[in-house]
Image 1 (cartoon, rainbow, N blue to C red):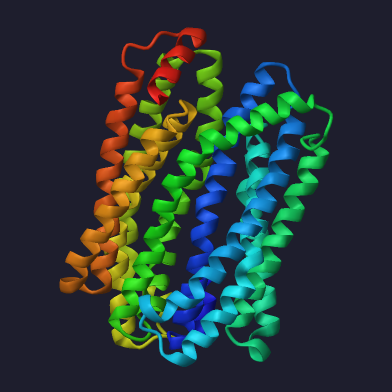
Image 2: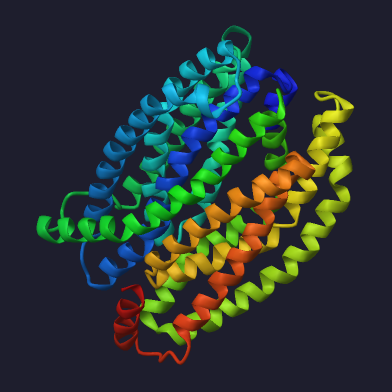
Amino acid sequence: MPFVIAAWFGATAETDVLFFAYALALFVSNVLAPVLENLSVPFIAERRGRGQSESSFVTSLALVALVGAAATSALLAAASLPLLPHVTAFPPESLTLASRLLLQVTPLVALTALSSVFSGALNSTGRFYLTASSPFIRAAVNLLMIWLLHSSLGVSAVIVGYVVGEASRALVLLVACVRSHLLSLDGRPADVRRDVTEFLRVAAYQSLGMVSIGLVPLVDRTMASWLGHGSVSLLEYSERLYQIPLAIMGTGVVVTSLSRWSAILYTKGSAPLAADVRRVVAAVLRIGLVLSMAFAAASPLIVDAVYGSSLSYEENHLVLATLLAYLLGVTPFVVGQLHNRALLALKQTRFLLSVTLLANCLNVALNLLMMRALGLAGLALSSSTTALLVAFVLKRRFASATAGATISPSRDAARREAASA
């Protein structure tokens, strides 16, 4: 999507504000969406294993997520408006635009939360193809809306496109859940309330951790605004290209891993889980290194092909340097995500919270250090360095959590309870 925005709007003060407003909405979405989509899978698998209704749990969770996300987004937008003049370097006219865009983007968070619950439910049944392809539906609708409205609404057309696109994605996933009999109210209310309450308790730790993770792009864009007009947009354009190898490596493996590993854990135990995680990580390391080097070698051609006619020579050079710094963190990030999913299957959300809080502090410190010498590329290099250190810590924790494990699911349950305490 940023490729289209670059072609139609370039890198201006207005696009800086657009990407900042979207980053704020993305911050809330990144706090709620991964928790709802990923953590729901082991809970659904557990209810299925107990012979209880999974559809009533999914329905109740979807309603709670919709209301909670809408309230959180509205409160954050209202609270952020008076803070913008103090934390950004935007001129007064850009602050007015920012206020309008923040209000327009609010519904996006609630729709994303709803889509995430539906995606988690479908992933738990093995219907990965639909959840993996649903973002393409959102993107297609978004492109159509921007094309129709960009002349009349300017950058506001992008926000309208995102909202309508996410609404279309949520509708498609809703229909799929209904057809898969994943939505109903036929469960015992006491059992459903107990499991939803337990989900919220466990999710609270991961949500706090996701707050820390979600702050990273928001902090990066805030710091990028200190580097002058257009810097936020150029950082966004670089990051979008960086997402391409991430998507190639992570979309299939990372999305399916939690469902697979939850099933292995609850049917076979921790020892088979540890063996499968090691096998997958080893394969990802080999593929990731080759893919990252190939993408880095082709980066000058890719940047020129995508942005060459939309940005100046100096801006393209900044995008290229920033992209290369981001690419150093592709493989560590995916490996870290895999160990994150493995630890989620073990429900070790307290430890994940601690790691993400420390990682966020490290990223800010590295930002301040590296951006002075390298500018935008320093922000990207800071993210890559943090990803490498986090991957190492999560790998060590998972190895410790599964060391000497038995193949007995009942005995593993006691181990997991002790580890998560």
